[in-house]
Length: 128
Image (tube, rainbow, N blue to C red):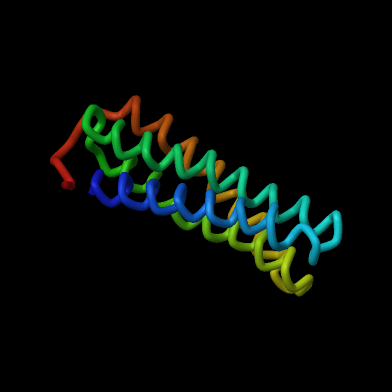
């Protein structure tokens, strides 16, 4: 399981760097100032939480329990919902996606809170 989080963290990080470059070099001339700000916010949060997934992959060695796994999956889905929602909204201005973005944010917050619980939970069987 930890390998999944390390792999996903690295993949999200690579994607964030590529999207950040696209945003600053290609999209900056095509998006409104507010849309570019939202796009950049998505990139920043994706980077923070890609690092979080990498950390969860490493933390899993010391705290191999179900809560650590749940924390990783909450963060994975939260990145897609929050950052992905921001990207989609910035590029399309589709109003319906605005309801997904806060859900993604709640998932990211939840992932950190569950990780705190995981650290205070006795290790169980290995999920790797």
